[in-house]
Length: 207
Image 1 (cartoon, rainbow, N blue to C red):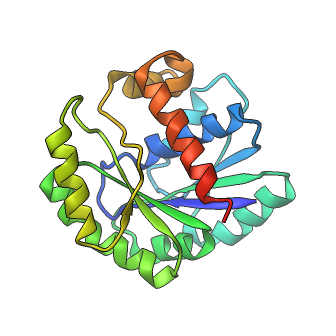
Image 2 (cartoon, rainbow, N blue to C red):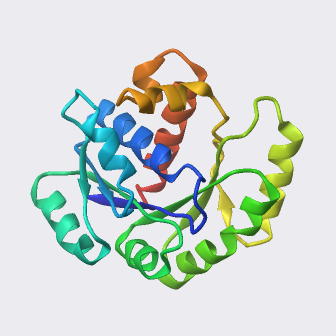
């Protein structure tokens, strides 16, 4: 089983949206996937409550139970675990980072968001795990903003995932009805971006 921690010490960066969309993409690709929701707000678990489909499995646990949750996922046959972490929770985020094979750091392109990734970068470095920033909620067509955001991330010495996720209504509409972009609008641009991000992630996990 491969484990991916999705982390940001800033709220509102798209951690849960990224985790759920990647989980459904993984299920579509034939992977048995578990989302472990460490956020006390339990947004991922709440999404699961509104979902008709049985998969992916979403488990809300306190951070202290993360090792047991990962063990149960592996024993249950999961091939991919995605850890959805809470903002402003450094110790829990470090535990998740240490348990992961790889860390994804969603980040919006605004200057306040870019400045705020420093703490998360330090957590990734302390864990000693490969980490990538996923630029998220990019306004469509904002190529200059995207280039500036990539340059800002480079200052932290961190790699940026080659697939940026643009700001699209399909993400919000899908989550409201217990779906993801690939289910809500299968032929849409949001669905295509998630498919590309998942394929790229799979390539990184084959190291």
